[in-house]
Image (cartoon, rainbow, N blue to C red):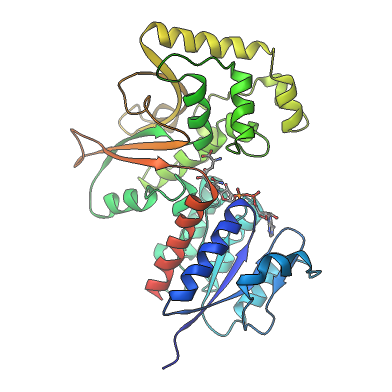
Length: 375
Ligand code: NHO
């Protein structure tokens, strides 16, 4: 008996994409479904299996290096190619590209399934969120494709699936708070460690986090708080709070205003030592220590606070008692604490590595497996 064939199109092969391809390759070798990767693209060049027979994943890196095939135009050419596949297609978006995310509704409406760690589709304007789920099978369109985005918050940690299940089973979310950024976690765990022995200045701690590979290529993309704000927007929407976009609640940026215009991450890192903003953060660190606490960069959604999004959602530095689980985090770990009607006295807590290629790719492959189980 021949096995079912499912086609996979992978857009983006950077840090997460490479890990994903390795994991997919190992999974495909033991899967009862025949998985054929028909597209593997980066911004400029691609591998394309025009006859839909599948790309050889064991040699993809060398094949890619010698490929002169231009990446098919997106979305039109890519959509036409995928729609003509002789069977179901799962599109894996491993980019952080906003225009790729903006085209999800078209792909879903064509019955193409989407799995992605890209936050843009789910944390930009609410209209895109509504359009994505109106087009998706798991949003009510019987002819649409499935869409899953577990790794858009907490990498491979089961944050999104847990919140969805709480809501679907009739629980009511009261509060979500925690450390949502692996970069910010690593930065503050080193800058303000529990033992009070942090000797690095803030600028050195930022550089250390960058050198250890934890920050985005331009560290300002983590330090301005937008990454955490995007994750909170996703969780708030899943919990039933209509957040229009990330401009609707306060975000404490740790990038000083005059360094926002630095031309790139290198210029920012070069100008940060000696900048007055380091003294401001050092003062906050000292004030926290004087109270027996430490500063951590956190996000919070308190569904009972006030009546507007601006009252309920916030992102920024806060002081935590040294005995609190948030203060005691290690490395680049995330911790997400969810208080609900059911988990009322003791919140449900999810904790573990929240950044990095392998754990993020695991969330994406887990989503791909969810699609395979449903089609
Ligand atoms: P890269 O390494 O920049 O790779 C992006 C790839 O996309 C490149 O190959 C580029 O050529 C390709 N690309 C861009 N536009 C394209 C286009 N139009 N067509 C074809 N290819 C295109 O990015 P990463 O690190 O691999 O990230 C990929 C996605 O995963 C991003 O959306 C990112 O936000 C998401 N993600 C990454 C991580 C992580 O740890 N690296 C996490 C979650 C999601 O949980 C993690 C996290 O939040 C990290 C965060 N910085 C933190 O908590 O500190």
